[in-house]
Length: 377
Image 1 (cartoon, rainbow, N blue to C red):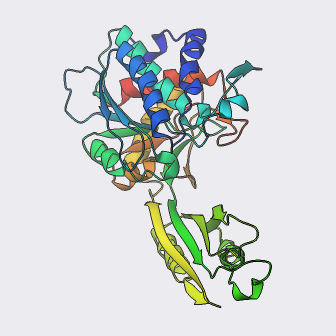
Image 2 (cartoon, rainbow, N blue to C red):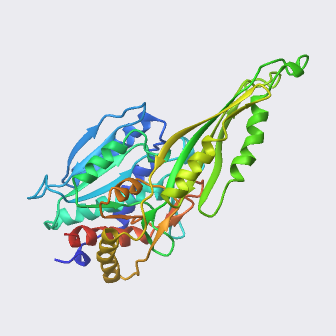
Image 3 (cartoon, rainbow, N blue to C red):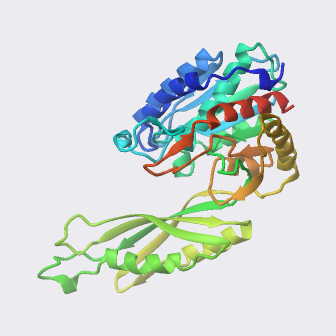
């Protein structure tokens, strides 16, 4: 039986995807992540899989390991690596509610990346229903912290990947159907300024503003951006009272680097910014870093060729390109494990209040994953 003969029901898929989206799961809400794990775990069990809920750590939510029955269970197979956390706080549904309009499905996290996880699971559900035994055992690992750089589950992902032959990452597909083979490094940095407090009215001259120092540093940091290494300040926190000269300010920087050499230069440039001036200390510390997954590696291109043939049989042309956005594919690709990334649903607006997917991509991408699961060997 060919994967093309599997019966995917678009209306049923939409109905069953809805609870995944309406169970909001921002990274920093461990209880919310536990709720979405419950929702997903039920669907995995109903598809015939065995489950293991892995407790969270670092104050974050749990992970879910899903294994489908197979005669060679325990031998290297296919790992589907996905995340269940989103950037959207609980309550975002009031601004971007689940809805179906003009061939699009809306909701927080539907593109990044609950929709992709769902279609990969739907592929295995239909394979199981058809009584097909895939050439290799299939395991899903769904984690709670990708949106903050995977500080709690990197070891878990890497160890699971090392026990498998291939990795599929159903992050959002690109608009032209492209997948990702290779990702640039993503480094995070934490900034802190420590000033001298005073009353902002009657003793302004006695204070040294931590906010003012940070404000001067931000343009300096972003001005270091080049085509090969970028710097962006995306978070800043400071001050409690307008009548107080601020004594502390905190910010976060995201840096993209195309090569290991670019990454090393960028890290050095950031760490060299630390100084004390006018009694205000500026401190830079390195945070989580996703390594470079070098584009064009032979093992990844060989896996892509099989996937491209699957796509052609479905009716679309699969292309590939490297990406400046990080994913957990950075880890598995950097380990040298054949990895194909961004195999998930097509849509737009990820990380915004307009996040949506194209309805037509549900069946298309479910077939695509079914084909990969049945053709990778």
